[in-house]
Image 1: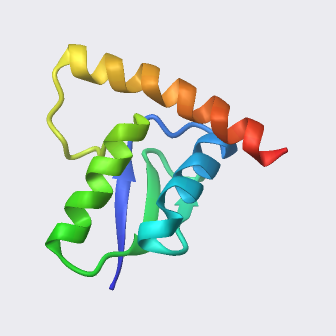
Image 2: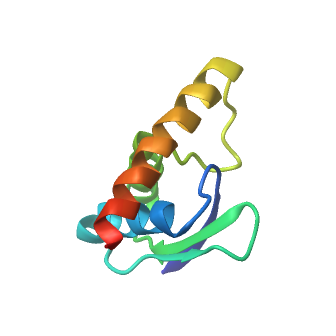
Image 3: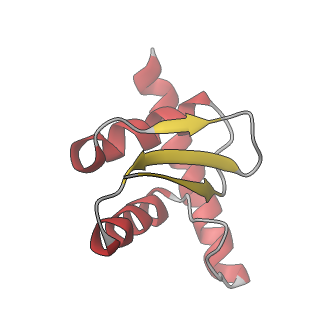
Length: 94
């Protein structure tokens, strides 16, 4: 079933491109709505384990969900990671 999640640290098309490309293999087509804040990521989720995998992959890219409880140190580290993911996404767009 299609499910939507509110993700933090997604700022631009470069971030969206990284998310889409990084998740495509496990989740198929991924939509990222850059008009809402926090950004909304919509994709096909089959079960609870699939959702856990999605959340883990998003954290790995520096884009946690807005319902996750993060300490200041962890949140700062993820924000830094998201800058790298964004830069990679921008380079891959061109």
